Length: 205
Image (cartoon, rainbow, N blue to C red; front, top):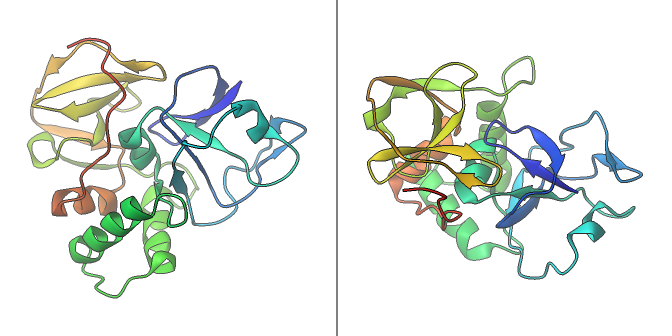
């Protein structure tokens, strides 16, 4: 059983495929069970999975709580960003685009994390979303077509319904305003040129 993160940032223990592992700054499990905590710092990271051999070891009694993501669009929508230790090339690319897109030319990881934290959670510590026109958003962003509806990935002119096991059948873009799950500073970073990593293979085209 893994701690799978969905685009809304919810953590669900289940068996599902993943492309990335990450964390939220520390330990949020005890005795191999998730606690009430959902983060310990503003640093919500996306890490590489090259070294993974036994995912079960990441619910051990030492170290941080490891979280698992279907793909990078999912992790970004949940409010995470690339780790500077194990995912350095992606981190550098993200930070460079973030600085320009968000008009923070000297931002370091701490300032960036503070901005992202304010954009990922509202005053009640719930997922913060925002609205904009669907046609204004780049590929890799995850949206809802209706409040609390199923998340959909924007990709190649269409929308693909998200699930923890992959994406469903493509639907044409309906246009109009949508609820955006990917935090606004992250979307600006993507627009500025951050190239979102490989998608989990789509289940249906």
